[in-house]
Length: 433
Ligand code: AMP
Image (cartoon, rainbow, N blue to C red; front, side):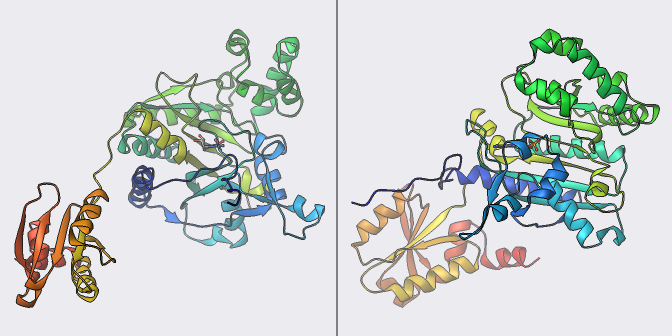
């Protein structure tokens, strides 16, 4: 036998038993996108490396360590240096916003997408090389009401999928006016303790001191004693942050201020936030996160446009739902259509009628014995079997309840009603509304 080929490291196949949870989280995300009046946008899976380098910053992990580079089969080194699979969607969405002159549209623009992202990281539980995010972005609104609205939206998402113990961690990292002084305060502080920093943090101290606070290995006392962004905010940033917190209080959104939470890149401004399961902040990787990036559009060559968005990791959302044993809505009841001999035309015709009424149907395509067909229908999880036999000549089929084993003849044109308890005409009327 030929050697088998496995899935790439850090990727996962979602087998049918895993996908109902995904259907659920995607349906909730789409429904909320609609109810919060977001418009769908799609962007390419790969972009120029330079877009991410500028859009995320050379010193971000996503660019420095995790870029998933791609090139053609005959691609040269230079070509491979040029393209990368998207590690996150914001840079691509803002690129599209600029490229298509979307600033002239009536704003603020509310954009959303769901799709795979790629980071060439060391795989572990909850950390994959391909993962899926639900992303929302608002462009052209300087807030602070929209900041609170997006945090409330994310929290509503977690509640709707059953993760009602999610909590928002929020912080403000200031803006171009006040961050330089904060940055300097961090440099001064950590330089005094440089011997206790990891190599990673020592490097960050030079290129991006805010991100030292991000280092999971930072000793607790050192983190606690570090200067806090909230103590260094200028009056405008302080007022913005105060309003965001007041609005969250007013909305009853569960949140805590986390002074260590940073988005340590120059064009990230003001509000930064992350979502975790309450009480598991330490061990649990974030379920999602986002923040304001008022400087990004300009940095990518567009006109200055305030922006804010979040990315919710659907893989980690599904993992948390599984850990908490959250029940999913039952799958739709399937009707098997079985028969005898060579009556496949009849089986497919009956199947089509049931599908017209919105039912899920699996006709048996074999000519096995009836008993075998019923057995495999029940094993495959079908709830009903419509058995086609000689009664069809008299306009009837046998409807069998595969749970109880009871069966009775039903007029073919009454089959939908017998299965659903509703009349087909009512059903049709509901669907055509
Ligand atoms: P980030 O842009 O790093 O804040 O990521 C936003 C969210 O995407 C995170 O909170 C995670 O839920 C999810 N995420 C990020 N990286 C990964 C990964 N490698 N595997 C799975 N989920 C991820």
